Length: 278
Image 1: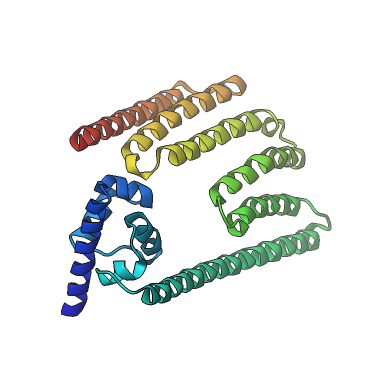
Image 2: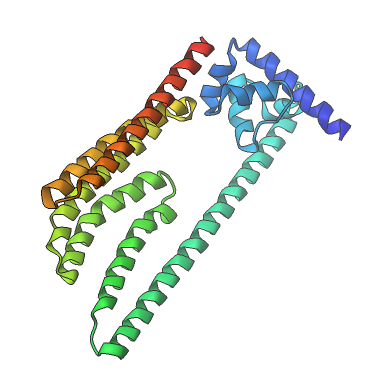
């Protein structure tokens, strides 16, 4: 245990020295690695160690080898090559295990969807000698599978591809659902609400991508403002097609006020944290 602590302290001191030698601040180093400056501070104080997936990029930013980084001192080139190969193999093995797990989960979900569709079709036909409600289940399962497939099969940008699949499948799904249920509102009001919901989801995704994790309070405030605007738009759509009670509208206004207060608080916290950093 004491040996591990000494090695961790040695690496922490080495990271600190190499960072200063490269004229980098903790924040600048953190931004290049995609972590927070608090994480870098913990590395340099030996509170925690860098994740194994960050060793190679950290060594490259500091201008040292991974062997030197792990040993806390200069190492021979042969040792460096061995360490690099070991790290790459470990990282590759971890990626393969994760990919295999996603494939197993997707195969299980696909099999359960297929089994559920078959069971519903058999039960529906056995009871009524026709296919009625089972078609709704079949269409819903197909749409759900089409949305989940990119999330499990995409190697990169899973959320983006999942949202794209949802955008492409939502309106055809509502149209088929309206035809099967014979509810015209699904083709009119439902599609307008679906369009507003999609705009909100894409807006949240854009905020999270552009703002990043370093400004979480600012991102949360923007999301809250977006939710208020989206709810206002959806309420106007509903009012255009339906007549609602005044109590229900008052409750919606109260929710909007609460969300706006939360957004203002998050925005204030964001500016306060920036002020403290400066």
